[in-house]
Length: 255
Image (cartoon, rainbow, N blue to C red; front, side):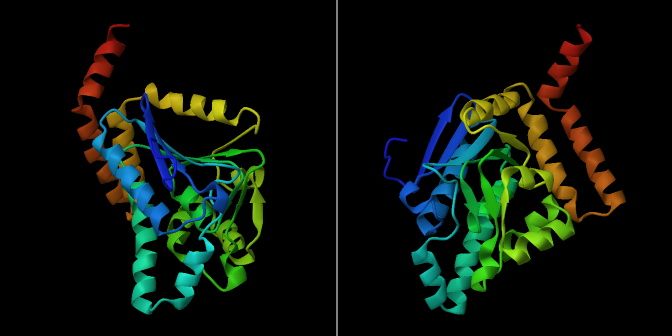
């Protein structure tokens, strides 16, 4: 975090990689530089064999308010090919979050709206402060939260997804948790401490087992039951052969 003027700050504390969206004066609104900064940080995570979990948060009062005004103007003026390239860049980010070998946690304070809500939804886990707000208001300006929809549909029921993306309304943290968009809601006063305690649990688990579990969970999305079970067999065998599993069994048998 040497240059605090960067749009994205990256640091590692112990086994936790911290990615901070650093445009507080713009409510951490998404633009090309911020998206590129998150991608660079995720590449850093993959190069660091000690990282067990990543947490993404926003500097200032909000997590991320969606696309900034200059990005919206760019969309309005761009050609089909330019808009396609821009949309694919966000798609690539969401895929990177899914394909990263360690869990990614969104720590949401304030507002997570539009693309910001998409960013949180694309993470593996979402922790929210009690005053956080979530929403997909794109339809109010004739836009569609199209890229994140495949992930959102896997997080919440079809009817909850339909309501969320077609009414354009904001949800409280408690309501977002009720429909499955948020994992845990913590008090505003103790949010930072509660998040750190939540992340600490990944120090008690096997990194290789968590990596295999994350990959399997998302891999079986498009498979029928037989194929999903067969894939589970393959991963089960791979897990048995890992050093973590061998050491874990040996330690358990010694009790």
